[in-house]
Length: 240
Image 1 (cartoon, rainbow, N blue to C red):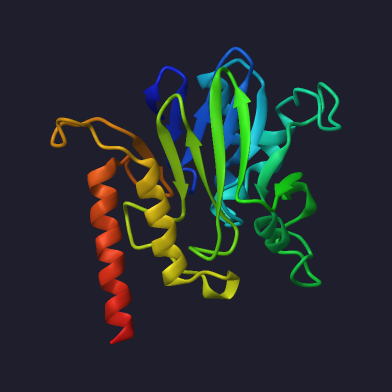
Image 2 (cartoon, rainbow, N blue to C red; image 1 turned 120 degrees about the vertical axis):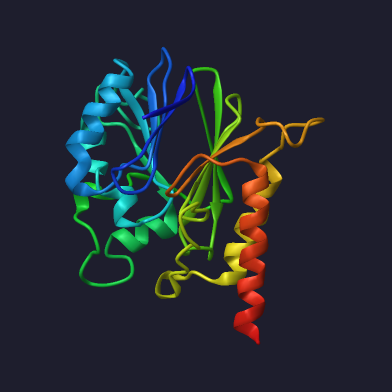
């Protein structure tokens, strides 16, 4: 567990990186890791905060991001509203394409059991949540790693969760079978660049917007610039 701010943590080692935002009104969990690590993830979240989980957000339909959905969601409590009763499990939020990839939308045999499916989806470019005096932007980024990716931006904390779009351990997997493209990946990295602000006027000093990548260490703007440049080079080599 790495604490970025008093209200924001990263959990690593359970598959894809997991973000946990906490506060008096409850917790928001971004991605839930591999299925076999779900109980350990939930125990870790409970050590971070005694408050109930109010929202679960998936950044894609990858198994290492949605595997713990059932365990983590059923341990939480919805706020109510949007047809949800207080005390019901919190919504699992994703883009509509991510939901379709997980459910029977694309094939007769669903890729995941229904207990893991998102319960609240969106088709527009962005969905917003406001909790604990924190504006949370869920930004759809189609045809990057896949056709159902999302970036999550915690505005007050100035932390961006990139999902599989950005990975400090390797180049991203462009899942062409699920709608991923190199051009979409570069567009998604450019969108991240619009959100991530370096430490100005001291660009060589640590600081600025922090990025929780899909896997690997927490990053800042300079590392994102280098990663994007390498991805551009990779595209040019593939074209030649």
